[in-house]
Image (cartoon, rainbow, N blue to C red):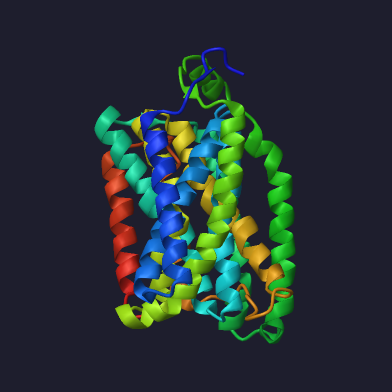
Amino acid sequence: MNQSVVSAGLSRGDRVLFGVCAVLTIGSAVVHYAALNETLSFIVSGLALALLAALVGRSVDQLGDRLGAGATGVIHAALGNLPELFVGIFALREGLVRVVEAAVIGSILSNLLLVLGLAFIVGGLRFGTQRFSGNRARTTISLMLLAVAGMLVPSLASYVHTPAAQHEQSLSIIAAVVLLAVFIVSIPASLSRTDEEIAAEDTSHEQLWPLPTAIVSLAVASLLSAFASDWFVDALTPAIHTLHISQTFAGLVIVALAGNAVENVVGIQLAAKGRADYALSVVLNSPLQIALVLAPVLVLLSLVIGGTSFLLVFPPLLVTTLVAAVIVVSFVIVDGESDWLEGSALVGLYVVIAASFWWG
């Protein structure tokens, strides 16, 4: 472990995060089990889910900082996506397949465009042009392009009515298994550390929580996020009707943002500290693992959990916007530099895409 990194007690901000998470989780449990108001339950449980996701991310940050940028990004994405996995499982059991489809694509879009864009804006306004490891960025975005292509092949087969379109479930299962295999073989490269990252760690003076505190916090927050996800999904359908929003918009924006609070908070915080490599790793590893792990796992789990089957066959507009987003981000980060203007453009594109799904 880096000698400049020392254990310390919880900061005031961390204590506030713990307290707010406790209050919102208890409040959402009361509203849910007392059946007070379905819209209120939706709002409170959504806030609780978002804050618990942020707490998972903060806990993982304390563990990952001991391992380097690549490991931090991988661990953040793996555990930070747990709330999204729980929401997807409960939503499929309720038959909300459109919400899950939109949430999977929306989670990728929100990380690639909104969160990365905000990180570029915050970092750019504070430090000017930020530089990061171009090799790691290019490797991650290349995997992202390949993962999205593999994830979308069943959709393309359906659109052009090939013989494979008659076997959507079998093709989705094959694609899911292959994507998971690609993720497994990509782990060693993701965990490696560049010379630039090692040099940056030698100058870091980050104060970390005691290790037992980080582990217990991660375990408890992950467990509570499962309960909050169940309450959130239970209130989702009534809230959709009450608030007059479509299932697609709810999944693409509301569910995706609630489940991506980890990347929203941590990625932007890291950019604000000038730790561009860490910020990029955290933000980009999340959509990569959604494509390589979350979506395939939902395909396989939907076969055994009951409810609606989840297939890798998405509506055309979701597919088109996803491909466009990945291509745009590829061009933005290929030079290994970022600034606030590029971030503003990414956020603007996200707003346009989100608005296009308001009506369904």
